[in-house]
Length: 548
Image (cartoon, rainbow, N blue to C red; front, side, top):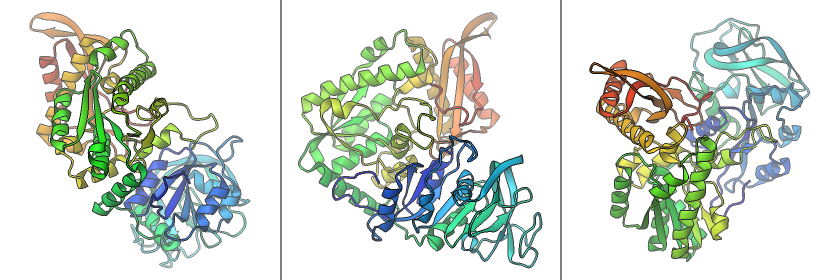
């Protein structure tokens, strides 16, 4: 496992081996929602290290089970990600999901072949009720048909809806394998090898699988014999504060504060641990949302934390002049942020840097789930950089194991102000991530004002807290409008509103037309220079949430 500071609590866990599937993080989250701590590791994580985790005593970071994630690859591809077959012989329960199930069959000496037709979307799944993996799962309908299976029609076969997404088909399970579930098009939709190795061809982690959470619960508690050890509450806060105190000792800490829930929660946790030995540094890079600077400063003043405020907006906007490429804009902002922060941190003379890095940031920055050069960089991360090395600071990341929804639960426990707790996520590069092409004063004004209108209308209609993110995007495209009796050329504003649970996947929100109409009318009437308003209806994947 990853090295931790001495004295940090080690929880027993379930490990998810990541083969590059889009739902890998979702499997981790589902396990945590069920009260079991789970971690995502690369598919090629050393077997020797896994073995050490399996052999640990309970209560001391023992690996209780292993889950193989899905993948966009085929096990039949020569260069597809594969772990060692030795993982199946560690003596710990294993569950393979979709590609993971096919890989288990492959590693067990079985056979996987190209399917004659793929199976995507909802399917009727028939299963053997006596299997521990399906314990207590009630039928969607009693009995069933739709494929050959032992015990079919005798009351021992259950039926439920599952979500399929595969083309390859398992033809042979190898030694000790038994089919325990099937669909009309997939004779091997679930299996067991020996007593504790399972595979399911569908995705139990997605909401579309009706009994998916119950299946995962059975794997965790009936097969792995896990205990509930993960909950964000006052006890979690107490342990986290003690952890920070052990890590920091008598040292001083600086915290890079953006005003978002991640960095603010980090600061409050560190402040509870070491008090005035923490100094927050809040840098206004000129790319904040409307009113955000004032709100963050007010929250800082009310928090009792020591802080330094730096207005570096002109430095950032000057550095961005003429820069059009999205990745280059991120690099410019990141580089200048390091420079400004370094100038202020050296005045304070701290030994530690506290950052609001959360689990997806950390994993995605070094993700090897589809590694060995096969994964492309989607974007540079704002948090993970060279700052600690440049300043010779030790890094403190109290949220490093948490997802965004878990951070919000922690923030609520810490009684962080509602304005920060419920504020939508905001990218490190600020509005530069929502301006396509060069960042100019005009586009900044339009983006900032239009985004304010989007948020105001969502709050008025009660939709603000029902969505994950909502904002306006502006680029260089122009369109003709009619104002009064005159034709006028102006900017196109794109409204982007998405729903998500962890930001690894997202879907556009089916907002009522009357709300969109109010947003459009207000933006074209109130924001000078805008003639058209559009609505983004792309989901992630294939798109990203932020346009840049």
